[in-house]
Length: 418
Image (tube, rainbow, N blue to C red; front, side):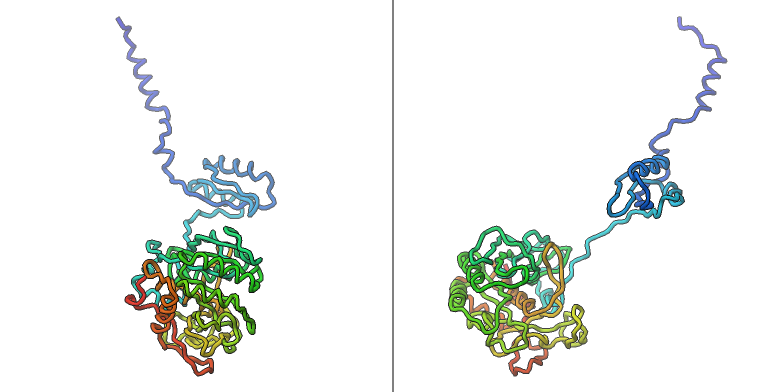
């Protein structure tokens, strides 16, 4: 038989249970919610790790990270009361609550807006990378940043020496990457968007870090592209020279066009007649002058202040630097154009080099997917479409008496890219 417990003992035991402190539960411990705080310490402090551990432990918090290079301090999980108490520590400079940050949303550059890219529903420019234009464009330039998160670079070659080496050639200048972005920057949540979003870019490096090169390098680069004529639809050449010529390169351009590749060339930035600039004066290319557009809208109401330069130039007029003349087929925005740049960056720069890729992007729309031309006639038909669909809602103040059409891709029936 179990011995009986005296009544007095039961009462004492019950009283002990009632008066003893309750165990700490998870609900009790989290009565005051924690947040993440960034704490900046006195830069003269030594032993940052130890000081951090002591401070946070005393306040019942948890260390997240300790920093000793950019600044002395740490992040920690703390209650609001603990964070407020920490502000009074003489070795603490600041205590700041953590906050969420976001990548800046995509910008539709003024140039893409001025040629009415967003007005064409086929391009689906909406900040979501769900439609990519099925086309391949060769950027023969300073190279293209093949790791840029806003570009779809599928191939590259370094041809600076006159011999092309595949899978090499970084853009150590930025010019080629800028051109590539205007052609095909992704329609996503960052940076700009190109005329032909997501176009497959082939970066062909023929210019060095200073932006200069040789005709032999260009010859090698064009040879590399034409060898891939079954894949590549468009070449952009935002380069050239005044008074020079090359029979070999002229032949290379003609053979590229004969193979169905559309060749787009910048007119030049000397405010001179394009007729003496090569390869802009080649009869088979699409030669592009530059327009100054300050607001991405027609009407000439954007003023004359340039956002990226010290000069002034009236909105919707011939760019003050642009070459001109009857050799030019078409004009496109070229002043203060925002686009991708080297080392994963972005930049705003000006020139007919920035106008040309707008037209190359439009040519990419016309040659995408099953629209790919394979003959000279097909390539020249694309040039004809680019010119015939342009508008004249701008002011030609170049003085040459020849008003070229302004690129316009708004018509979904004429620009139905794959």
